[in-house]
Length: 471
Image (cartoon, rainbow, N blue to C red; front, side):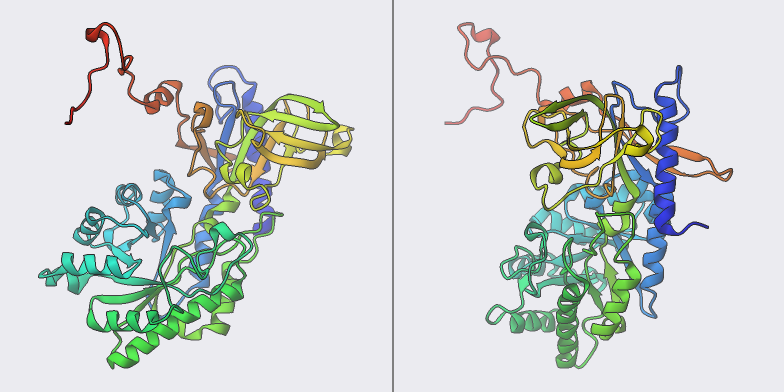
């Protein structure tokens, strides 16, 4: 059997070859195809998804209860969430939409974790009524829950409610993603004057506060630095339990944030690497029930954006490959290219890897550009690549998390279709529809109300009718 590192590119290459073969086929293709109507495809390696979750479960094996709540924001796609639910995962949500999606995907309320730094009264009541786990972001939110739970002893007794701390353990390589900085918007800054004692007193006064939540990891954060934040949560929980003379805090939610290797095929660091660091630096963690909230580490390696080169030109000595994939699927890369560089894998129109030797061409500095009308709409800039020509294919790996979850509709670019693929019993590739392409009619419907007529007119009968009048 090939290693996991080699299996991913091998399966990806087989899927791309099948798509290339179908892109020129007449009639209804047996696999997804690149056409004028679907010039960008999202691909998800389902075998990779399954393997990643199995390795997470194995790495975090414990005598205590462990809930692996996949981050909905990384993959708000119903069929993939149902796949995680069937595998025994939970779901971490951060908005009403994500909460309802998790419920519809089959996650039981007690396996859903609700994290948001700005929960409204209505959101809190809905979460409490459902019985989902809630991580409280601040003391004012805690006061709201006091009001909601007042007199509802049945709910308070069964609730899995925690309080989120910010260990203020430092910034990683990507400042915008670092959640444990001194001034992070998330949680209660534990090192702020009086904050630690206030958290302890809050927990001692509320028997229904039984969980500490910390999210100190993120892309660009080392395992050791993430462990420092988790150590702070465990130390706090142990102090609360000591002062309560009972196990008041029973569960630690360590969040997610395991970094992903975007530079090559290797899956590193692994979940096993993370467990080894936690065993070394925070052995007391595994005396508690545990919640994890991984997203990128579970899904990034499974995803690929596939498009074709529509035009190729040379300007100012730079080769520019114009494609239909850009800011609408790679928003972070377009606006923060130094933080979110992506690999570019060129293929021939037939779906074979394109190398300088095989294609008898030269390696040239290349921009891989998207279709949006601004200069920064680039998947890669000044990248040394085999000379790309119109009709060549471009695959962008490591895009299984977030790249399909936050489509950017600038220029009214549609959401792209997404297909899952896996190895069939006979060794071939099976494809499954995950999300349909957004039609032009759907794009127009999403753009706004079509009936608003001119706001002023000499003919009052043809002017817009206001929805309300005040004053």
